[in-house]
Length: 354
Image 1: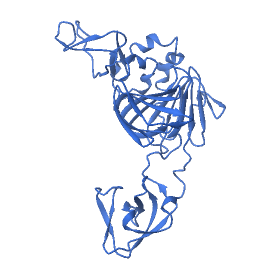
Image 2 (image 1 turned 180 degrees about the vertical axis):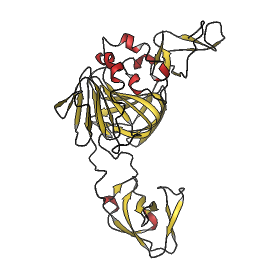
Image 3 (image 1 turned 90 degrees about the vertical axis):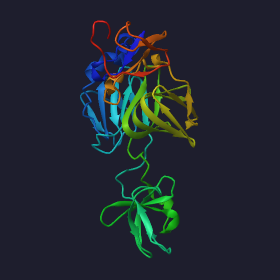
Image 4 (image 1 turned 180 degrees about the horizontal axis):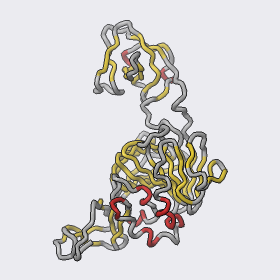
């Protein structure tokens, strides 16, 4: 049996809705829920369907949308669908995270992106004019220089502490290498400003009760941190769930980089990445075998239909042939098995194929 997953281009989630409602109650509400949270922006949480608890208090459809500020815990019921976008307030490009089924997330971000930053004075005490660059690397464009004996205020640092962030008098931002400049103050006290994790609920723990619960993440570019694992998305859609002290990430489209415990793993569509969770501590990520297409049966991908996820096709049970045209009269192109994931970009409407 061949299945289609996705919702763009009118293709729909062809088989999942036929098989899953009895097991996963939220599928009965996907169609009506699709438009409920279409306008949710960065820094907001929206309830698509059902009811969730926010810090122990019921949150229903009458409330619809609220800010992520101040939220610590969100718990979903078996029929709930909720979407949030961890990012700057109003940011339409923030990652989208949809919670479905019996799940619980706990905010682990403790910073304040709008809080005043500590500053230190940096001075060029060397013999040469110093380059100030657009980004925190030596290959970045030089946007201006710092004369010998001149001083500026640094209000941030790179994640590795090797670069200092400067705001120039004209408002432009620049970076200087910490090894070539004198610093009055503690570099460690500066805010890490090149860390993509900067907003509430962008760092969270995820707990799922059964196969019907999980989180569906999508972004053209962006990052979230789940149970201590940094997940950077590149035009990607990813399904996440936890069980048996394991975080499982299944890449549905695009690419992701998963980093924790000093190890980085890159994974593309069809790949599965596992992160062990022992005493709430994340182990190194490991790429597993390509997951079976049927493993996505319970994921409500229709809620995230967009240009970055048009449609994904695969087989549910036995191997199937793929032809060079719409119908069995065309030449055989290849055979696919349950671990194959194909991107679908359209469909035929002729009498001999579909």
